[in-house]
Image (tube, rainbow, N blue to C red; front, side, top):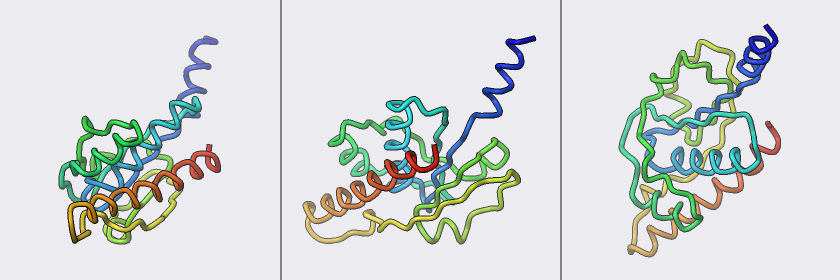
Length: 153
């Protein structure tokens, strides 16, 4: 009986974060990577997922700039938000305006945080200019994720 109570308590305490973006290719993937990395390093009892209102695949430049920070998102998948509607999400982080405008209503009680980051996939210029745009967005997301985990968990 005690084991069941402990299991039920742990399940009730389980927090699930969903990071939402338009195409689930860059910003939400980077946030997913940072949140998973720091949640694990800090022994946070939280599961992290990312999704989009569309799926565009994981952007190779997002993977490249995350590897510069020693975080590998190359095995991530680009998922639709609908996949997570009835999965017990407790926290929603939207990282672009379009995603929040198009987001379906979650049936559970979900704590929502919105922070818009520039879309590096829309950057133009030289290859270096575009890569630096990805790095700039990555660094902004990194700072946000560290602060978010400290404040919420």
